[in-house]
Amino acid sequence: MVFFALLCLLAIKIVSVAGRLAHRSVCRWVRLRRAWRSGLTAEARCLRTFTTTHGGDDSVVRTRRHHVYEFRTGDGRSVRFEEEGGPATVAEGDIVVVHYA
Image 1 (cartoon, rainbow, N blue to C red):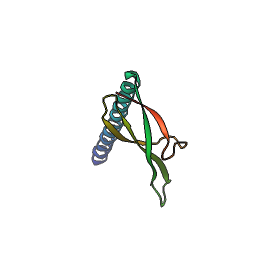
Image 2: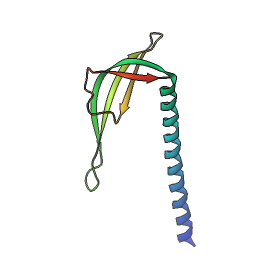
Image 3: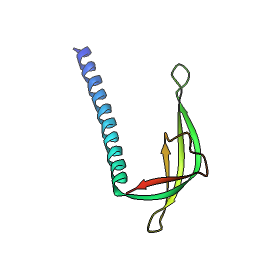
Image 4: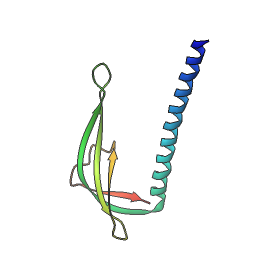
């Protein structure tokens, strides 16, 4: 009986984690789709690039590349944002086109 109760708790935990991941993915997809469809673009400058690593010891080490960009909107506001997992070809000082909502 205890085994089945623990099994149910584990299943509930797995479903809740999967639900949170799905929610995060859908929110990101909606945000990106809104930005692409808005038609608003600007030139952004890459201010900084850096990498982070996760894992080690007995697990696989994963490295993620990050970029920090800054651009001005059509109404003159300055916007700075960080992109995780961006292209390896962008270096500090490069100008890229960004889409924003």
